[in-house]
Length: 280
Image (cartoon, rainbow, N blue to C red; front, side, top):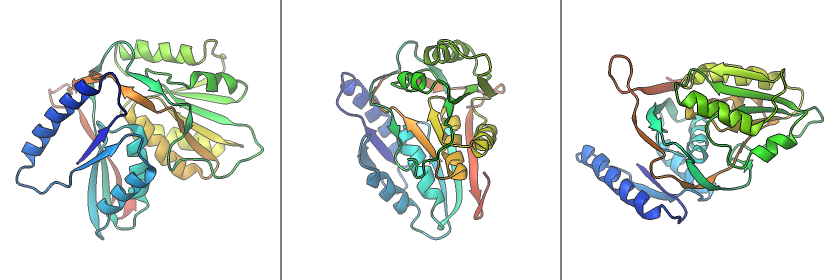
């Protein structure tokens, strides 16, 4: 069990109170089990997450379920990469609970300048043109200027569709904020917000067809971000995942768990490895 603390901000007191309540409820559910409970900083060194992944995969033949529902992308993308690199991991499922909804207005504040996420920096530069794949979400962070500078390169958008209203409106608003005058030939690939494997197939195909570097920008839903991490592994050393990490998350960033048509909680599990075989 991992508790991630944000840098001190104007919401700290409320965030800590909410997290304390969640912690009590979760620990009560596991009262008969031993819980390896860890508290780590959001902006901590990558060695923190490396050690966590190493400890979780220390047993040969281990089966793991990683719940990314409340994990920042900076954390869970790195954990997935490290767990997949371990020969001890026999089975790996990534679990995600779809929120019932998000608050209106800004979801985050005080984002850092764009930089490669830990573990996903480019290793090899090429002379060919750059391909940028942007996962569309709700917030531009500090990446709008980066995209404006990239005009003229091969720019493609991964658009979550159908996301449901009002998400659809907010996705299009962000797209026009990032690129006010979208060239008519710009490729906008529509993939369901929860269909990680369809997003992975498209990103991998685009990445392998690119003649130069590939920049992946995960602003969209977490399943699409997970697809970018897996595609990065397939595309190779010319790929990089860029992100602008917020220091502050709104206390009411999201609420509830979405329901399926038959009234069940909409929780998905993506099978990345089963009995030692990778399925991506």
